Length: 111
Length: 112
Image (cartoon, rainbow over the protein chains, first blue to last red):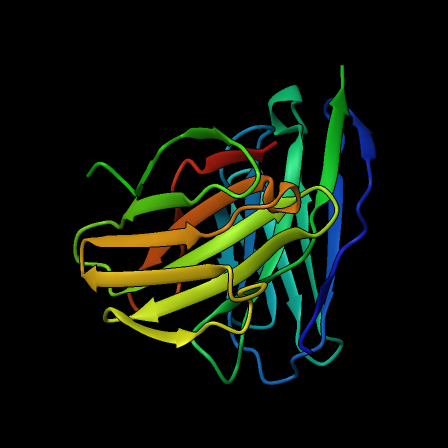
């Protein structure tokens, strides 16, 4: 069974600080990785995708990928209260046309 | 684009009743996924279709669940008979090229 593991949290971060979210996965052949954000009562929405080792930056968000360690992370700089949500790590199955989701990390930004 | 459309948005039913959830994917997308989300189990993939063909239904909990995709613009997920443990949020998502998945707003199902 291919798995994606995340700390469920909650992770509490002061406003303006850096929030760091982590994820590990078991499918060594995976090539595509995603971070989804889900506000309470809403549906998941894609915020970042990453396919190569290293860092990918988009505004305040930076995704980091290390395939050798099977590790993906998401950094949120200058955290805002509006960043409070559950963040789902997702990994494309290397042998099927589906994405495997982690259980999510609940992030709370305190003013 | 209207995005993925799901109906109904909320459903309350009694145990033993049949429940039908509906999904209209984004026009042009060739893959459709049905998920179930609960606090205990997170987001679970139930079944997915490529070009209207069911590819993997290994996530369907049991024979009470069935899904169809008669054409590229419509899919249904049916539960018959429903049970209280089926209470959850059911999401439909669609994608083009097996990458970014776009989720619908979900159907919140409560089985009494």
